Image (cartoon, rainbow, N blue to C red):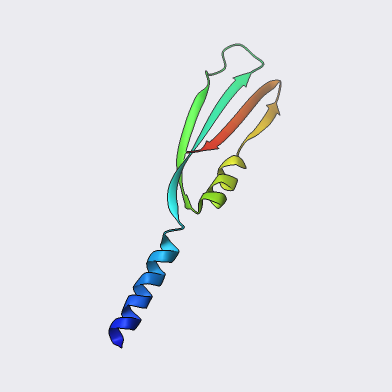
Length: 79
């Protein structure tokens, strides 16, 4: 009987952890508006979550920003 409970607990632990994986969020940032701005840069960071949550978190960093005549575009995608 103990073996059945132990097996059930192990099965539940493995099934819950299978939904969570490590993904890479890659953000490409480009600048324009003035001379001498940096080239396009790419930043990567890890997200450990379900695929849907990781995609939402990653893509929420995307956007267009404007500050003192310098515009930057940040485009983030999940890999």
